[in-house]
Structures are given as structure tokens and as C-alpha cells.
Length: 215
Image (cartoon, rainbow, N blue to C red):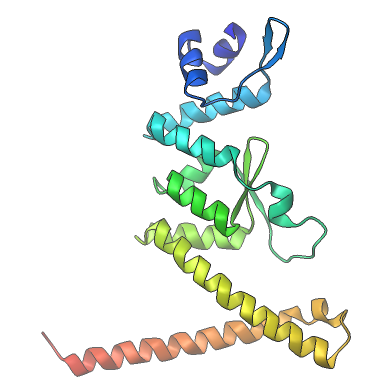
């Protein structure tokens, strides 16, 4: 315990306090000897980094609980399944930096439930670099992360329906092996239709503004 506290830059008393608060997992015991490892040290350094960023111990405890009970990275990524997305590995403090104080326990739990996040040892894995970057950009624009995640859940439903429609189309008229080869065509159709839909939405908003006239 003394060695772990020294490496983490904290006192033994602080370490005992963290252990009592269940901020770190219990050590492996062999008789009367308690063994701590690199995972414990990484967790302590994460706690220190999050405290420096203004998180409270209660908030860190909730984050640690969500983190410890998150989805495993294997379940998240479905190893062996083809994907065009690039997963991103993050430490908890890097995740907090991405979302500027919005990485609350509630938002983390929602992201885990949605399948955006998984865990791999002491690391967090985001399922998609593109989704991570877009989510962070929306938060920087002032949109709450909770609203972004709620919208993500709704988009997921529509995306699943579109994927099913395209898969049925291909499997009805082409061999099954063509589904992977033709997926870029499906993406192009969705991107084009979304662009046209946004054009229509912006045009309606502009016309509504003109109808209201100056206030």
C-alpha cells in the first residue's frame, strides 16, 4: 500500500479513504499480503486527473461504478464482424476533456446503454471516431450531451430501419455476398436524402420566418 501511494503521489491515508469509498477495486490477497497492480495505479491517477478537472469525489464514485459495470469491448465491437468505423480508446480523463464537464455519470450510463461506449481494462472504447467527433462538436456548439445522446438513440432506430430496407433489397435481387460490397451505395443514398431533407427543412424555416415578418 505504501508503494502504491508513493507511485500515485498520494498519502496512504488518502489511499485508504479511496478504498473505503470503493473508488478503486480491492487488492488481490495472498494470506495477509495485499497485492496492488498497474490497474490500481491507473485508477488512482485517473482520480487525481478528474479531481484536477473539478469533478467531485461523489461524481467520480458514480463514474467508477458505471465504468466498472459497462459493456465489455468485445460485446461492443462484435469482434469478427465487418465494420467501416474506427474505434477510439480513451482514458476517463480524456473522455472528460472531450465533453467539457458533460461526462456525468448519467450521460456515461446513457452512452454505455446506447452502445457508444465499452470498457477494456482501465480504458474506455468509443465505438466510432466519427460519432465521437460529431458528438463533441455538438457539445462545443452548446447542445447538452444528454440531448445529443437522446437524438442518437432516435437516429439509431431510423438507421436500423434503413439498414434493414437496404439489406432486404439486396438479398432479394442479388447474392448475399454482395451486401458488404454494395454498402457504399446505401450510404450514398442516405447521405443524399438527408442532405435534401435538410434543404427542405431549412427552406420551411426560412419561409416561416418571412411570414412572421419583423417583430
